[in-house]
Image 1 (tube, rainbow, N blue to C red):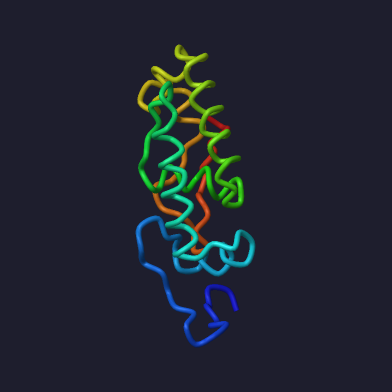
Image 2: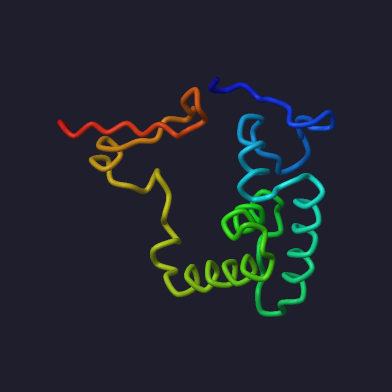
Length: 134
């Protein structure tokens, strides 16, 4: 039953707080990452504290940005912090690549060849459109 959310228990409800995943992905995140609203908030706060203690790192402290790193590291805050350090170290060492890394700056023939549609498919996946004949 694709797209159907089955409650595991009585208090299993849809989470609409900041940084929450779309409804159909919340169950998967809970099963695979152990993500709950309380755990998510606690991990984000701890990561923000660790980032503020880093004097030489001026990291983005937006919740959605931090959750990317927490989710990829399955909510291990120390590993997420190391991944953020690596992210900024890479951006600093390759400034020439990231400075003009905008879709509008890509050559027209590249933009004609491959594009990402603004909306996702019915399963929430991004849709890539490739036109190799051009």
